[in-house]
Length: 113
Image (cartoon, rainbow, N blue to C red; front, side, top):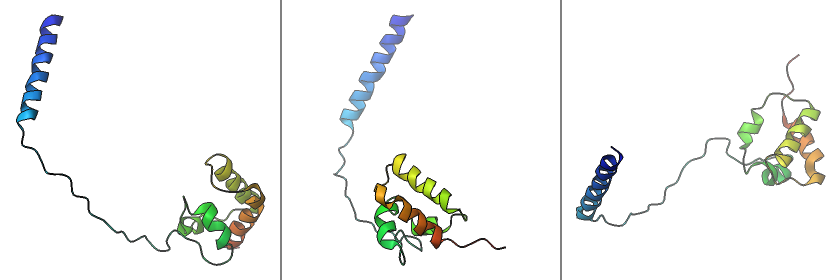
């Protein structure tokens, strides 16, 4: 039984090779430049703290994504910054962790009372 299956597989492989050799050659692939429009508010931060947020956060996060986060206490923002630095290897220097957390905390909208 096994030699019969092996022979069938070999015959199918040979047939595929012959069919591919007889196929017409296609021309080289043509590459075209494309442009896209990024959704507002785009990937970069502006305003207070942008000089620290852009190199630290915008590689992975748009400013709109960060602005859309729920209100978080300062300690939670610090934990998030540390997670991004230590787990996801965000380009954050140790000396900037507290400043980034403070900037993110101050940029959010306080919840309604």
